Image 1: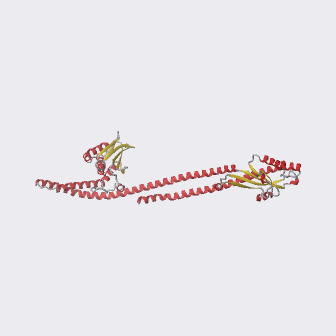
Image 2 (image 1 turned 60 degrees about the horizontal axis):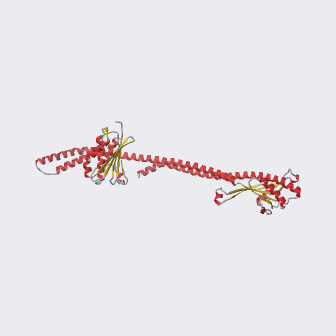
Amino acid sequence: MLQKSGKLQGTKPFRLVKFFTFSSLVIMFTATIIISALNAHWVRNILLEKSEEYASVLVENLNHQIISRFMLPVLIRYGEIRLREKEQFLLMDTVVRSTLHSFNVDMVTIYDEKNIISYSFDQEKIGQENAGGVHYEKAMKKEATSRLLQQGSFLELLFWFPQETKIITFAPLRAEKQISPAWAGPVLGVVEIVRDVSDDYKKVVNLQALTVGSCFIVMGILFLVLLFVVRHGEKIIERRAEERLKLEEKLRQAEHLSAIGEMTAGISHEIRNPLGIIKSSAQLLKKKMEKLDAKSGIPDIIVEESGRLDNIITDFLDVASPKIPDLHPCRVEDIIEKNIDYLTPQIKDNNLNIIKEISGHLPEVLADNAMLYQAFLNILINAFQALKNNGCITIKIKYDSGSIVINFIDNGEGIRKEILKKIWTPFFTTKDTGTGLGLGIVKNMIEAHSGTITITNMEPKGANVEITLPVQET
């Protein structure tokens, strides 16, 4: 619960940052889409406006060519214009097509003053009445109009990607002033020009898509960077919160141990003196009983239990007042060999197998030989107790990054998770006998040498005790 609350407190400073980060990104994404839509609408209007201007130039040129190359010659030759006559129609067709050649014009339709189609690329339309509609009426009033015609599926039109885009322009066909004063610009008819601008429109749309895509990519990169920064910041805050909790926990343990140490030290001294008197009295009583040839095991029991109590008091004092190591150059592998020699009878009795994997050319360490011997001995005895007959312990010693690393790996059942969390807690033990101070004493000894000790489970089973001792200049 403490750890969870610590994480929550640690992440609070970043809640506001996250809120503003994601809110800003949402706003920027929305603004990008809106700007893109407005830009597309603006580009579409510009395309329509430029196309209208272009169509007006075409109509003006066509108007001039029709007057000069068709109307005047026909009036001079025939006296009137009758496009239903094949010769006049072919002449008109020649003039129109030659004028608009290479201008990407799909359709040209000419309406007369009565809204009847007089000429068209599509000859089936010739003779149709009232086909011009509203745009014809405006053109007759000398007002040119254009409209955009787009074709495609619903989704293509919705996202401005039509398959085909055309501009239809209606413009008045007028007599030119310089030809005759009698024709001082009256409207003679209406010209409808249909131009295919699909390629131009697709280029604009592709440019627009490139712009929008670039914006989204930039925004996406910005989003990922901000997300990385926020998450990295959260991890830093969480890590610091966890470190703070660990420090607080260590401080509480230190205060707890300090209080226990002071109490234990006082009580231990008070107990040890009468205990020594009891032990010596029991030994004296045993000698007198031997002289009187009286047989009793009570003095032996008293001596044995007094010795056991004295060992317990020694453990209490070692935890309460850790010894200061007497540092001398020594070799860890030699200390391990002494431990194994001492434990050889126990190893044989339990059919245990000891495997040693020791790297060559290991440097010496500055250490207290006796303290390390006692620490390693406690670890090995604990490992023996966790093993059944025919068990195996692997001892690995190597040099890594300025430290000697020692691993004691057994193939026992391992340590349950709930026990592993409490393993360093003073007075915690799973054994029927024992004070629960053994591992604490070992940890104090290793830390007195500026080393570290960790205990983890192995896969699929077993436990691993890893000790790291720094190599200092001897």
